[in-house]
Amino acid sequence: MTLSDKERLLECLALRKLAQELKAQAESTGAGGHNKTILSFAAAAEKYANQIRDAKTPEAAEAIVEEAAKKKSQWDELAQMLSLASAIENNEEAAVQEAIQEAIEMEELQKAALEEAESKLRAQAEGLRSQAGKGKTKVFDAIAGLADKAQEGLDEFLAAVEPEDKWKVYQRIEEDRAGWLTGLATMQTSLHAETAAENKERKNDPEFAECAEDDEFQDCSTEVAAAVCGTVRPSVVSADVMNLLMADFDIDGGFCAPVAPKPAAQGGGYNSNGDKVKVATVKAPPKAPPPRPAAVVRAEKALADSALAPEELRKQIVSALTDEKDGLLAMLRITVPKLKEDDRFEGVHEDAGQLLEQMELAAGAVVLPKGLAGDKLKDQMRNALAATGPPKQPLKKAAFAIQKHDIYVRDSKGPRLTNEHPDFLECAKVCVELATYLQKEAQTGLGMK
Image (cartoon, rainbow, N blue to C red; front, side):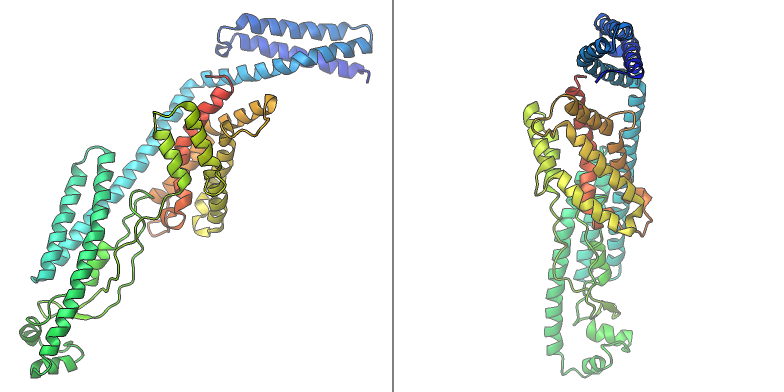
């Protein structure tokens, strides 16, 4: 097909524009010492433009266009790469500011989580101490012992300097708490049996019978209750104590599994002062923490293993991302739509969508289809870099926004992602670390490092 005059002019203009771009990039920091070579490419582009303009016939001009096209695609790619490299270098200060902001956000999340952890430890210690002061039987002695342990744990938590040390203390207290609850439940079962046996022995006691018939001592005088029941009925573990030990101690999907408060079966019981108390029947201690998503665990382990060779690390990350059964991408494709159907978390719907979209783009830095090469490969790497790198870093921004929800965005009585969508939250957390790794891989794929 013969070139028209307009088409010939457009070809000339395109080559001249490319030449100008190459000249500009030759003077930039992104040229990396290859200024002369880049300028020679610019001169060649201008030469082709002049030849197309001066060609005697349309056919001759078309032949020159075809010859120039073979090199023009390479020059275009070079110009794009140089532009991207310059942008990154020129935005070094912006990147530093992004890193500082990221560190600030992480510090805010950590600080808020630690404050919440301290509040819960303090409430547990003070609550147990208050309950222990309500009587002087062996049950209250046991509760006082737990209050001492809870206070020791709180003091150790406050004394720890580094956040990592504070979380270790918190995790240990949470593990101990399950044992405390089991011990109290066992004691309560023993007390019920003891009470039943003693009541059977005293069934012929006139005062006891009178009280028993009168709505389980509800109308008995304190003196009668103390004289008759106080020596026969041991104190029981109240619902308040059990609820203190069964409280939700999970902090932003951290060390402790969410433990939903269980409704306690209520029955009659009396303390050493003859006052009627409610009895909490506990069949089992809090459930063990649910397993974290396998892909999250694999990715964290691989990223933390400094001994892994680059190729082995890449292999493990690809596996963690793409496993059809429980890979990170597969999990996000399941959990994000579920979250968006939950109107209680409307505030993070947009961030959840962004997280999935940007993670799929970022994964392109290491997840490479067979046969992908040339311009398509470069485009995939650029998309991965745009998702992970400065100045916008959309993947990290979405992940941080999601983590903020449970800490200080949600209403104090509102539902937690930790409890309602734990797998999604775990995925969001690991995306921050993955973004840094995938950014470097994308830069390497583009020949920037």
